[in-house]
Image (cartoon, rainbow, N blue to C red):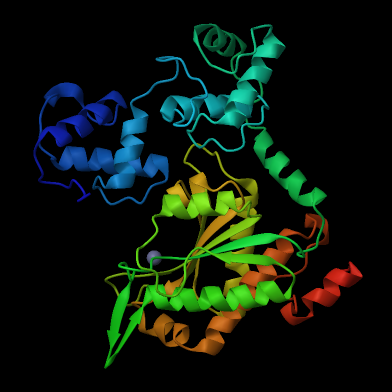
Amino acid sequence: MRPIRPGDRGPAVTEIRTVLTGLDLLAPTAAGADEFDPHTERAVRAFQQSRGLSVDGRVGAETWRALDAARWRLGARTLYHAVPEPLTGEDVRSLQERLLEMGYDVGRADAIYGVRTSRAVAQFQREVGLTPDGSCGPHTMNALRRLGRKVVGGRPQWLRESDAIRQSGPTLVGRTVVIDPGHGGTDPGVVVPDGSLRWTEADLVHDLASRLEGRLAAAGVRVQLTRGPSPEDCLPDVGRAELANSLGADVFISLHLDEHVNPEAEGVATYHYGTDNGVTSATGERLAGLVQREIVARTGLRDCRTHAKAWDLLRLTRMPAVRVEVGYLTSPADRARLVDPRFRDRVVEAVVAAVQRMYFPVERDVPTGSIDVSALRAVVAAGTVVD
Ligand SMILES: [Zn+2]
């Protein structure tokens, strides 16, 4: 859909304004107005910021879905595990966050009422003496309210994810890594003409992905790419996440290049799942930190740090997932490096080292830039760590 943007008028704008007013982001004085005025734009930006979406002040498909889900306040309807079309919404997210705070295992607060959420609700119901039917109606809501927030700030999902990683040991052999070269097909991503040449993000990240595939496969990893070099259509992010989930991936790495109107904007940034209210994927955050630090150390790209985002790609993937923006194609300095295959090999080495470090216990982790990726197999076989 074409994004709804400042200056637009019509019933869709009225809808947007109504939801934003309900969220206290927009003053209710001009309720019913149908103009996308500067107040509306400010409110949309604040909303996007709070949801970890890209902040552009327009309502495209992703922001629209988030707004639609935000209508639901916890307690306003009965929540249950619906098949095949699960219930989604802000009320589901609030419930999940509440359960997580109380120490129940719902995985991520992804705003989808799936099996895991239903199981956590049933467990809660059993413990407070209610019928464990896994749905959240008035009785369960009352029990939740009565108990209040007992375990605030424990972030139990952090511990669970890290435990699972620790128990699986330091080897890469047999793991599944899904690599996601961004864009493709009808969507070339960032395009920069260069004399008679034309650099596209889609082509460059696919090259990075296939190099990475080779290196990881050599270390005994099962690797799957989300697309070939020239697919017919561009798979949306939701489809990419579903693919990674269906393959039971252990790690998901999405590769992109960035762009900016200012040619001086340059550097690498890595994104992991998280929202403004502090809900985050601990392992995603750790992987993002490792990827970011290894790339900066091994390539000298400017460090644009790691950031939490609630993008579909990061929210819907059930494994540690990161999106790396490996430099700006619009920066002459970054571009000169990115078009050099030897430089791309260094980026790939860095990502492999980061994935390997994910599986070292934290106390045995090694200094950034120190893993000799070509000796990985020997390291793994010997069960020791280089430093
Ligand atoms: Zn991109």
